[in-house]
Amino acid sequence: QEIDKQHFRHFMLKEIHEQPETVELWLSKHLPIHAPIDSPIVLPYDASFYESIEQIQILACGTSRHAGMVGAYLLEQFAGIRTSVFFASEFRYAPPPLSPHTLTIGVTQSGETADTLAALSMEHQRRSVLDNNDFASFQLGITNSSESSLALQVPNILDIGAGIEVGVAATKTFLGQLLAFYGLAISFAARRKSRSQEEINALCEELRSIPKQLKDLVKEHNQLAESLAHRFADTEDVIFLGRGINYPIALEGALKLKEISYIHAEGYPAGEMKHGPIALLDQRVPVISIATEGIVFEKVLSNAQEAKARDASLIGICPQTVETQIFDSLLPIPKVSEWISPLLTVIPMQLLSYYIAAQRGLDVDQPRNLAKSVTVE
Ligand code: G6P
Image 1 (cartoon, rainbow, N blue to C red):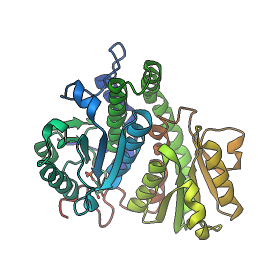
Image 2: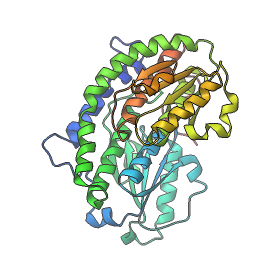
Image 3: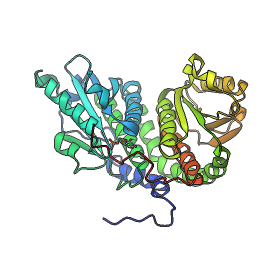
């Protein structure tokens, strides 16, 4: 299939702009307006599966692992199921002790990442000694390729259907993976009755409002990020802060920047900054802080204040309010519930790293030393 960049300078920029459509497509398939919303992701399991699963383990690499971390937050905090996320490359050689009633989810957009495939296969074999009535070796794959090695290896696949992604740095497939986890968390919460119907409806309604908000956001932030990127011409280090459901987005922001601009970046849960990274701060180190309204809003703002006191230049990814005036620059996002905020906060992350790399004249779509899928260990 021939794909071109249309009027975009790079595939990555085109793929960032395709994200409202990625969500629209996903919604039309999994949360159509007049259909019942208790199970956006239908798994071929019976009711006892949903009821008896006690824990979920997520195996992935790179950006897919960050999607898994948002997924774990949703599965634990929204659906109430204990969930752990592992680097597939670590899990392969040091898995946790076996326990029944466990669902293993492999996340890989390409479906070809060697470490993820090997970790899943090792886990399947290791679990085959357990009784299958205890759902011991159930595996699920989340991928953008229904014809991948993952799809051949794992019996059940959630195809995120984001279309071909050419840029090595994952953007729309990351968003697609997040959507798969929203669907799973809603389905589990509904079947296990861990959330009321009102709470489930509210989350579904918010998801349905995303495409429109995303369209406006991409347009607005495209310009904002392009003009802000100039300030990073000589930057060597950047710190990304987030908390709760947006901590993985801080990690993803740092990974994107490293991957395509070759600037050293670190993502930290904001409350941990005082235990080390704060020593790095001075006027040469910008701090990009995600501060969405919710249980940790005030905390993130006070963490940002601490950074400001060290002369760091502060960029806020947050709603435009009185409290957020402490930031030197603002990449404003609409006021939404904390649950769905990652679907929006990731956009400025992607666009800012894109423009920083593009303005440095780098090969954004094919960064040095990286490959779209890493099929070796
Ligand atoms: C490579 C890419 C990363 C990607 C990772 C996992 O290392 O450079 O951007 O996140 O693979 O890819 P996957 O296909 O498993 O999601």
